[in-house]
Length: 219
Image (cartoon, rainbow, N blue to C red; front, top):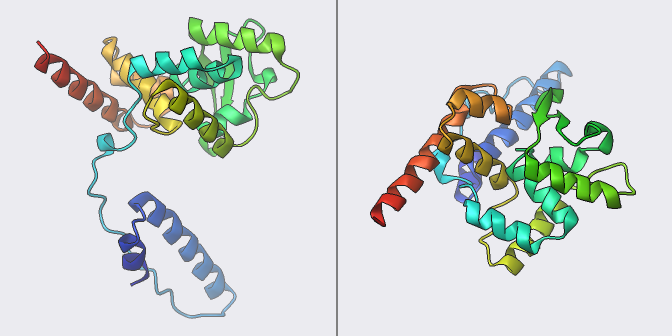
């Protein structure tokens, strides 16, 4: 009943899974403390998500990324490119320090999900943006603040640039589709974005297929 109420309120399946995991952990602790004997959520399951993965958080088109770069200041350009070229998540962007950036701004050391460390190759555009920002930097953090603050800043730039705001994470999706469009394999996409499974990268191929369909309709 609790899950159905949350579903009716508009909560997505991934959010419900997080809630359910927390609730189960609570009841495990209560049973261990002998405060309760049963777990009412042991067989609870959220309904299967009816929305396909490729219909969520579609990437920013390349033209939109160019507009964001044109309307952003030095720090904003670095933020956009850390997502759109460096494929960093919001939490990774705000935690990145200058100590994680090599001296020539050619590679980044990123601590990702589960504390996993990966080395990110830097594109020419991102390298130029980081070097420009570094000349003005006085802080330890490259971008800093919180993920939510970074999202709000991106939203403001989207308004100025006349770009539809798709969220900060959609910048990361942009680089995945660009790699596929360049003819590289899904293995390259998974490795570049730090995905454990190639299956996770299949969504980028779907977005490229959709873009191709739209382009062919214009011929």
